[in-house]
Each structure stands twice: as structure tokens, then as C-alpha cells.
Image 1 (tube, rainbow, N blue to C red):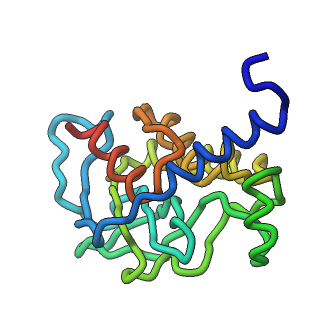
Image 2: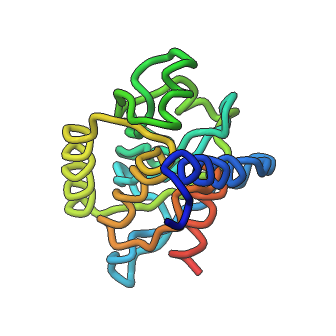
Length: 194
């Protein structure tokens, strides 16, 4: 047997996960905006009134951070109009449930969490401008994920993995899920924008 017994295999797996989370975040990264990969060649990064968008975003937290999406419409100045937030996180605010979720699945929530829309906590972001058809498609997919995502588990079903499902649905490549959220969003953007 490769690991001797189940306990040593679990211990080795947990050490790998914890080591991957030990790097530190960089200072807040600049905002990046691009058009969807399927946009017509005449589309530019210029925001037109009521432009639809999705923003892949990470934020700082007391732990290693959080990855999620913000989506909706932008006004003429590029400001969000009544944005919605979706991401996967433990449903409980109890630190015990958060720690337990590093070993076994715990109940999850899939909406807004504290700090998601506060600019001082944003650590990285990549905004993608969408056509109305693209927006409807991705919002339908987000709603489906929200309806079917019942648990959070740090090593296999975390906020990076959940946000990555949305990116892959849109046709984007995604990095590994064991990165810190800021690294995950930065690599997601870099992999798909050159």
C-alpha cells in the first residue's frame, strides 16, 4: 500500500493543502477588464450604458481569502448597478465549522458573504463585458450551481473550484484549485487574456 494506512494518506494530503495555503497575498492588484472571448471583433473595452458584466473576484479575509463572482449591469461610467454576488462558502459563521470543512464537507451557502463588495477587501479582479445573450446564459448557469451546491470542503469543493466551474462554462481555462484566492484570480485572468 502506497501510504501504509488511511490515516497517513489523509495526513499527507492535509500537509500538502496547508503548505499550498502558506504563501502571502500581494498588495491589492489593479482592476482588469476585457470583453468576452466570443465578442464580435468590433467590441471594445469601452462601457456602453447598461453593459452586462461578470467579475471574477477575490478578497482578503482573516483566513486565506475568498473567491467569488459579481455580476449585473454597468452604468455609463462603468459603475455597477445593483450587483449580485455568488460564491461557495461555509453556511455557518462558526470558526469550528470552517475548520471542520477542511476535513469533511460542511453545509454551504452560495450568495453574498461579508466584505464581498467592499473595495478595501478586494485583492484581485477580472471583469468580463458580456452581450445580453452571454449574460443570460452565465446567470442561468450560476443559478443552477447555486441550486445544486449544498456543501463546502476546503480540499476538493472550495470557492476556487466553484468559481472555476463558472469560468469553464464560459469557455475559459482555469488554474489549480489549491491556490490562494488572489493567486487564483490573477492566474485565471493571465491564462485567458495573454
